[in-house]
Length: 364
Image (cartoon, rainbow, N blue to C red; front, side, top):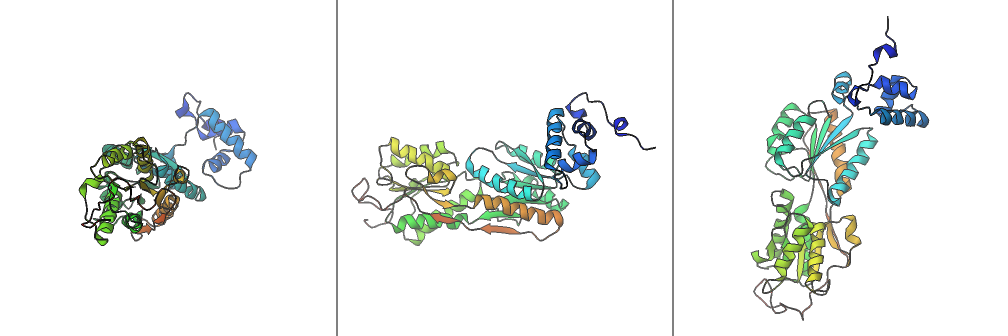
């Protein structure tokens, strides 16, 4: 004889004890209706969906993801592992991921490593044990600890802003080197010869690529590379400020500063003003990313645009290719950067400090 719903349910003693049947009773619907709401399926009226969601919130129901994965073959969840969650760079990529997952009726499970390599491998292990159907990683730090295992198991995964060329892995990247080359070439074209450069955290290949683009543009314009004009940054605003102080205190300071991301460029602006400089008359500044804030600072920041939201959406689409076919051909998708010119750059002031110098061998 089939058991009734009342006989099947357990008496709640804690949040973990709340079942789908308790939610159904609370909302006065069938447990199949609750299941459809949890899985974002159709054929549920807005009023009923709202009633079920209220019941879930009131009872503190938490879906048993591993059990669902075993029962249906799908967790309905995509895991996302990030280095940190501060700043608009990460937020813009996650915005694109979230929008794409909503179109697929999937939920997002977010973990942050707080820049700790050991956490990265541990979270990858957890998320791939029936907690998620696929895995996205933004700016991975410790990928060598798990990439081979993910590939061998055929577990769907895509890396975002990973440019390790030593092995072909499913990834979505941008033309970092070309973007930096274009920005530096523009500064040279308007007359700058002493161009300060603030690197990102050099453990990331994207930071290495941007430095390489800067150096290549100098070389192609027959300008000697001056290591004193390069300051090691970490993608944080405070380091942009500190590096700019160091660059402006050189015997012959730069007339322009190229920061490896917009956040550090904001720090450059702050330090320049503290130093008594007028922007962009005394110092031209260019960033990288084109965050929403870039057009609202004063002067509006010239920068290299990365299609951050598109990176997130593209990574989700690629991930679902591997969910449908874990052995599909490995793809590395490269999206184009674009130089965005605003008000923070102009030709150098020939009457200011360092007017008679260049980083080449001739006078300006």
